[in-house]
Image (cartoon, rainbow, N blue to C red; front, side, top):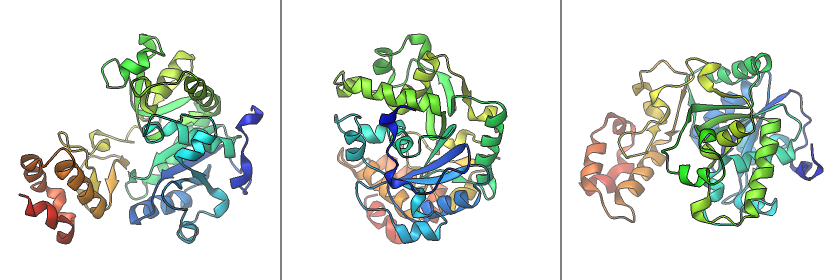
Length: 319
């Protein structure tokens, strides 16, 4: 591994397995605590980390410890920290559109794993199905791949395709949904170097390629092996993996996950009731002006029964 990748000062617990799993989060609430606690307890054949964005606040050390994550297994990341490591310095929101950049930053601190998995904070596992992560790593040991993602497909229509087409041949342009991904160490090191190379080209906002397009397209271009998560875990996810009605992108309150009847292990995005209501406020009453008809239709959906009335007062007052 090239020397420039090493940055071990944050991590003090030695590697004990060949694979690592990171929960990437910018906050700590009941939803995140539930996910982290269950994954930390299920880490039978992988090392578990929290990849914490300290851009707004420091890690909640006491809460992390209570959830089963020692300080030596917390990697701190942020947009400024990634910029200092040689990634994009602009335009805005690149750090948030490109989850692979945060994972590259994590690899600098723990550079010796064979596989790196990353989950977003708003992933939810059915009770007991967090064991799916250990199951996946066991299957990867016997049947390895360089990239594992959700809804993996050749794609020439998604919004990021025009930018991707400037970098990759059309045949290589692939998309995968990114709430849960696994990258091999060779692929993650390649992503790291190519992201830094792209930075030297001073990309504009129109040239930016988000992680969901950049990583699988790069892996395909390099002749690496790509797999959909269902290749390893057939019931990993279903249509509920987006949890989106037409145009709302709100997810589902964690209290309402029982509404989803698909027999799948993983749901996304799942948030607290407070987050769910706040997303609706921004979506329907935001800077573009109120969208009352859409809000009225959304408030009639069954998931609102699980949101405390106090959190929806402002919304209901508008309809």
